[in-house]
Length: 243
Figure (cartoon, helix red, strand yellow):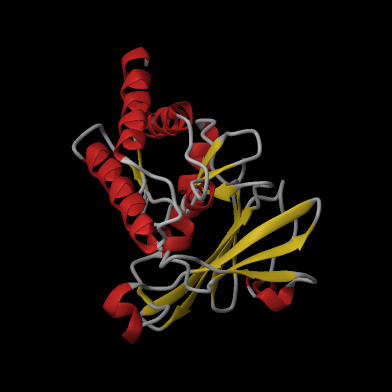
């Protein structure tokens, strides 16, 4: 994977020429593609209507415009304080994904990222290669209860990320997605980074646990129980013992 940075009149674009050989600001707008479909969140997920599936089969992409969450997001929707190109959310996530791809971790491949300066602030976007056939964990636990092996495999896959030092700032039931072959993929590495082993590993597991319990409180049809979490932890710690 190689990165190319091109300056624009309002900022810069970082991209991989092996995926997109020509890039422009237009590609960071849904209207810059022949096909664009908004991807929306569910059950109170973090989805804010800022993500689109763009392009056509066989090469499709996911386009995300960075938006703030929480109370601050109601006042400053998509502006961040400028601290240099390398510190922008989009460039940082692109490079984080590129590093994880080098580790052969199951993450979306980064295609392009940009920032647009607005005085002492900036806005940002990122384009990743769409992973075909994935569904969020929040959907896969609807209806029939899942076998212990299902949860153990999730725990083992999460450990693989932790073993590589990957910190995910928002590990939840939406960002963990599983393809038709049962392989786990991790999405959305905004504010993610590489870290030495530490308490953050258990903190991210606890965050995932809270996410699963929360969505089950919103939809009684979802199947997640204490025994499932125990199976997930067993898979995680079994993987750690054999690492």
